[in-house]
Amino acid sequence: MTNLYALTPSELGSLVAELGERPFRARQLWKWMYEKRVDDFAAMTDLPKRLIDELGQCASLGSLQSVARQNSADGTEKRLYQLADGQLVESVLMPYDDQRKTACLSTQAGCAMACVFCATGQMGFARNLSAEEIFEQAMLFARELASQGERLSNIVLMGMGEPFHNYEATMHAIRQFMNRLGIGARHITVSTVGLAPQIRRFADEGLQVNLAVSLHKSDDIQRSALMPVNRRWPIDELISACRYYTAATNRRITIEWAAIAGENDTPDEAHKLGRLLAGLLCHVNIIPLNPTDRYRGAPAEHESIDKFRNILKHYEVASTVRLRRGIDIDAGCGQLKTSLIKLDQISG
Image (cartoon, rainbow, N blue to C red; front, side, top):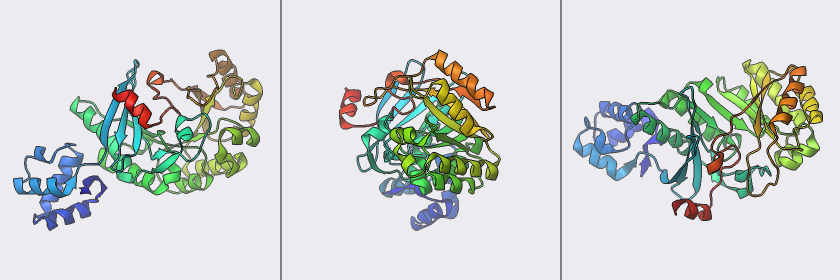
């Protein structure tokens, strides 16, 4: 079966021609897919029945199978999908009071980065997602929102996996978000644990897509203990890549900081971070640590975070505190994971 989301307009035209139809049928089909966002060939009422029947035999509108949903008390929704080969991934939709609807999408099944406080990193790596598998997560949210008279407004690639470890598919999917769903580049954010060469490559893409870098510690020994990727690209190399990015794009980087009580929420840590980031076009997004099964750290207290932010301000480093969402359904940052055991629990 051909997944139509994997096809370019010209490839879709070739498929329609192979089925004996004229070129305008491909344009009609494209409109049904991306403007009207239908999920069933039978709903494409201006296509001839013969073409609809043939498409049903040889093509599909995506490959993700919805397995389960969970809803948080704050309105966040988490979805579990099964891929064609049986792998499982999770995606999250977050509604905000200002009417934004933000989808948090996965780029890999599992993750190879092994960050110790992240549930996805704890589960290990299975495989990269294809561009169409990444894109389809967004399409499913966009389609459902459209049926309710709403629209998907923002996308963050902060779900399962390291987007820059799956660079080509991630970039392809980003362009599909923009060209096929109408999501503006400045409403898309890519989050990385710090793959320095890919940050430089991303800077040269010429996109206005936002970049977020997970830092969490400001010295190499302690960061390497939390994030093994630091042994490959230590902090000096990472910050150099960040400075290259801001110089090339004139865009501000978000520095993500999971605030862990007694670990990286201290005044001393704030001073070290302030000195490290001074002069960099950035802001620090402080995220009180979200709980995971295999990490015993606790979220920093509000008082500690307030002191931390005041110290950063001394270095002219701006900061915000992220609103924690979906914690009651394990849908917060660093909490996404899948397993057959968990699948059984959710389905039951």
